[in-house]
Image 1 (cartoon, rainbow, N blue to C red):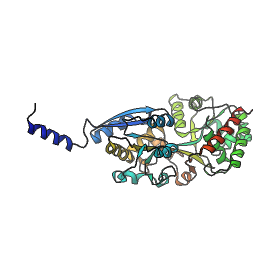
Image 2 (image 1 turned 120 degrees about the vertical axis):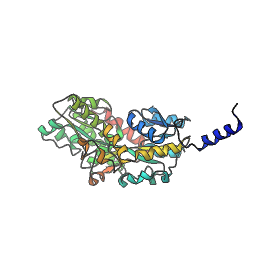
Image 3 (image 1 turned 60 degrees about the vertical axis):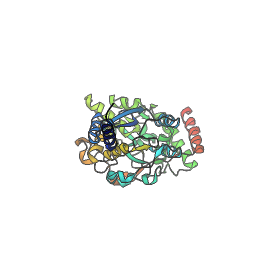
Image 4 (image 1 turned 180 degrees about the vertical axis):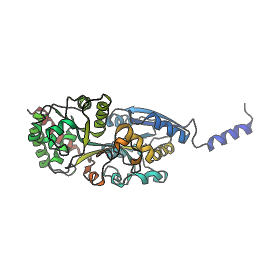
Length: 356
């Protein structure tokens, strides 16, 4: 048995240590979204350890947490599930006083409708639903990918019939069609949705398939020339084509009519045992040099305005990864649909899928 004085001294010293090698931050995250290098850097900065568990989609994450899963300190939810999570009291309000680097975030990405005042979340990874394409093929055909007409106009599509894919997602495809028609998806009426459905049905015969995964590979090998998809996926397709030394390259641009912006965020869970470490991590990732590592890893648009100087040389001034303020003004974060709206959209999507 230790002498009483030594026991007391040991206890006092233990309680005085705020973060040490035995301190652990538990993260529930998307697979592959953080590099080992950035995690090791954070561990060194906080003298702690990071343990990650992974989920494949927001629904999986939300279902697990709603069922009472414990042991996680922070999570990376997409914007459209934030309100559901806050209503279920799954999130802890952020202490902005512990996030001095919040000042580095571009105001254009702050205080969105899904989280006014950023009470619960801070944006971290942005992905644009846009057009990825085989630059050489479209240039040869004289097709301009800066418009949604490359996806929806039969006069354009007849030049690339069978070489176009779109996402197998009602929300994404209808939003793009609404932008094409000059409508804001967040304020579109039922009549607007019906008009968008007509546009989609008219274009569908020219598309090769609806694809949420294979389009990345098909673009990279040259089987597909145009895709409606996610900018981070187009970045990977471009990397794959470059590494394979293809005779073409994959490009990605925003559309002049407007685009949907997908936002993944950083949030602290209400059940967190180490909210202090979670705040440290969020603040760490809002440092420009650290934030840039996310873009260099996955080609994401970065909400941290001080990150751009640290981007890879080939990513600087990229029209989607490093957009101009005027371009960003045309990007829209979709609001959460009501149950009635979801059912109506599901019916219209079924009609699209079964149409010939």
